[in-house]
Image (cartoon, rainbow, N blue to C red; front, side, top):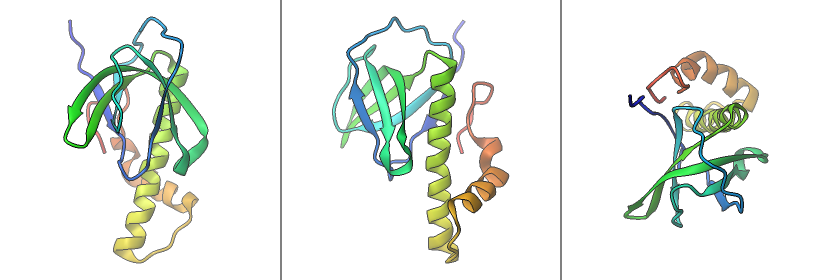
Length: 141
């Protein structure tokens, strides 16, 4: 029976690097969690890709598998799945870092408050972490 997918939408203001990997492992989707992101180039369903977000965490790379690639007006929308618990945890952490930085930028723009990354993380966690998607949830922040 079809289980419902849970989505994390990557914020477009943080450029994402998607690099095709040579290995094409058999997709064993261990999670219903899927990353949705924009790409300027198309990928084929089933292709393995490495994901990086240098402006947020240049040292973190997560491997995923393209589940879908849909043409949009300004590029492509990808649905990426993950076939290990490690990759799943890493992509959730990486995306949370993006949302924390987005919160930090919002606080500066709207409230005029300059806060450290650590303070932004503590505030974001207190306000929004419970809304962040995981396998048991079906909502996005």
